[in-house]
Image 1 (cartoon, protein in one colour):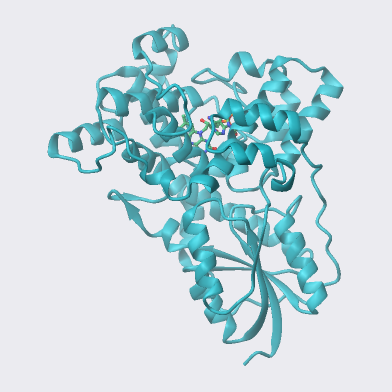
Image 2: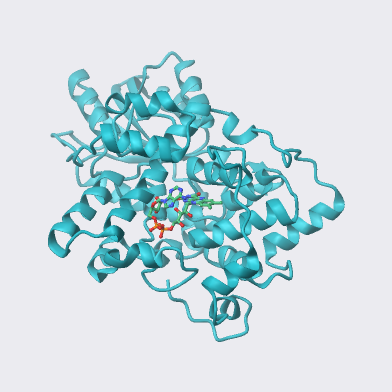
Length: 427
Ligand SMILES: Cc1cc2nc3c(=O)[nH]c(=O)nc-3n(C[C@H](O)[C@H](O)[C@H](O)COP(=O)(O)OP(=O)(O)OC[C@H]3O[C@@H](n4cnc5c(N)ncnc54)[C@H](O)[C@@H]3O)c2cc1C
């Protein structure tokens, strides 16, 4: 019993060493309390096991990316004598097991993004443990953007204008490691799900890296290409790296500024930061509205699906609607776990407005498919398109014919994903 005391860094979606305030706070707390620091990543049932609307919460793309990310993080932490424990279960269940062997001085984790993380933290506190949270994955510190936060729930434009006037993005911070002693050995075996997930597919490696994107020079034309349906370097492909927290968003922000110093600033180089502000907006919006992110009502907000609707939904999920642009996009999503922003908007508009289905079904399908699933960005964007979110204009209906004509005039995208031309991946 309690031979040794530990401070736990509970790893959620910031799976990195660089620029990580949670990890920094855990190291500081461990230093002050004279305890060892260990990192704990949980394969939580809410993400690894559970279903919503009959759909798995996460799919093979997300799981394989996460599993590979955790293995990489474990290697990096070990170089600093910190071990990463990986267990399957709710954090409170795993922490209870740890408590049988160690006394726990504190648990440090990220400021919750949505309701489930908040509930997990509450369960930890109910064990009588000290749980400290810190902001770890935003551009702006809450203390510096009071006026923008006070305006919530406002539109993106109102939020952005206030934040651009008042806020500045702090530099990314190095993590201060100090001598830790020997790493604390994990008291259980790694869960088999971890290795099963790793072997699903090589999704992590199908996501081009940020450095590669910067080196390509494509940032200088980002605004012109970001709306395309396909094409090498048409957009940054930052999303999976940010969603799993392999890359710090502040680092990405400052990299664009540095890029401007070397290659010149233009509308495109600014526009990537503009898009990162969308991510920022949805994070604060999610915290502000809490569970309403998932339940807000609209005319589509009846999650009872009759038989004909269920057929429509299945056709939409599998890319068999008969609308070629939708089918191509849905097949790309299913096969790769990724879809362009334009593709996401079109398929969301189709299932909400052409089929009249509950937007939350679409959001749940995306959650189960996307390699870059992020609770705030996914549910926030879906609600926005459904006209129940932070959009003063009340929803987004896309004219699919004209969109297909504009973004796929030669039908190359449709032919590729509908199997009418040889498959050539350009990701
Ligand atoms: C219905 C719907 C669901 C979405 N679900 C997710 C999701 O689960 N996870 C996710 O990361 N993005 C989501 N997005 C936002 C956006 O489509 C993706 O971030 C983007 O397509 C990823 O490709 P990229 O990194 O090359 O984007 P880029 O165009 O290069 O953008 C750079 C970064 O800016 C941020 N960003 C860009 N557009 C948005 C946006 N509309 N909302 C929030 N952040 C944005 C992302 O972090 C992105 O990686 C969704 C959009 C829609 C319309």
